[in-house]
Length: 128
Image 1 (cartoon, rainbow, N blue to C red):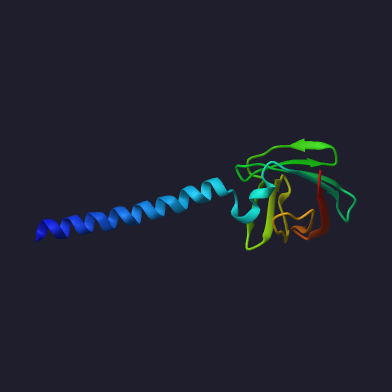
Image 2: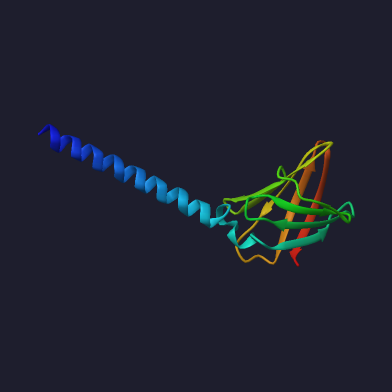
């Protein structure tokens, strides 16, 4: 009877580990939340302060950034899509800027609201 109980416990634990592992593997290959179609794409637009933005969504959850002709590719600049909301965080020397807006797979434009400290702006980006 002890051997049967040990076997049942081992099988139950193996099943839990296998199911948990599958969820992690699916998340790894699915990209950041429902934003998988953004991976590998580039978008651009001019914000309400006349700054020109270019954003490349990279598969590791970071972005390549072009701002007013200057290019940046910093691992602290990130993006994620959760509950159909795109959030982009960019670390500037003056602080972190955050841009947030609704995103659904297949969108051709994305409207973002940006904020850094007391500054705020809007930005509409279109896929290049």
